Length: 315
Image (cartoon, rainbow, N blue to C red; front, top):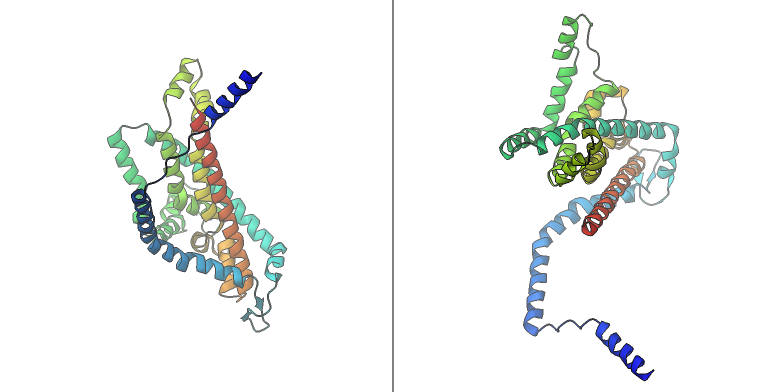
């Protein structure tokens, strides 16, 4: 019994992890110097974000609790939640629902168009792949406003699309200032944000798994849905968030291509700050968009962490 007890104590001593070696004074000084250097390097960026990002968000949040006087001015003396209560109005709910629906449709169309192109891009030789990537990045080298006005010219009643429609005997092509024109403009504007994450996910994928599925008599479609799509889920989630969030609060595209017939959330927020002079309501809607963005980012981070853990446990 005594021998067994002594053996268990010796095994406990062996199971205890060894204490980490103490840092020497020189190593501690080097670590402190590295931390100070990192702090100095990050200070300009942190200051910029604090002044031009965190502070405006704080002001928007403060104004969302302000009071709108009878003369149209904003008073910060009497704080209340009247602006947030107005978010339940039928008009505002309709604008939010319309914005969410068009953003969802834009995201779905971008995914349908971008996935085949990203797949083709990831499976090309390196030289051709580099050229195609340049073509994908070219829209970023052009002013977004110029590109939207180009789309407006193409879809206008005097544009090439209308001329082609008349030549085919279909009459005048009337699509401008409709929700369809807004969706087409947002798909054109945000398509690159879907292509790039999908391309990265497809390029990093282990294609030997697809070959193994084909060796096990899986058809091409089955190998795609059971192997390729799950392995590129991180790119799908990232691209969906990068397209849905700006589409949900889009302002320029609905204003130019939608006109007064397609009132979305971004345009409604701008009108509250400009024409209606209702800053608390505009700020509350802005906070709503910010919260939606933060939830999307948190979802993306959670999915990325889960994918990393899954890959870490993979053999």
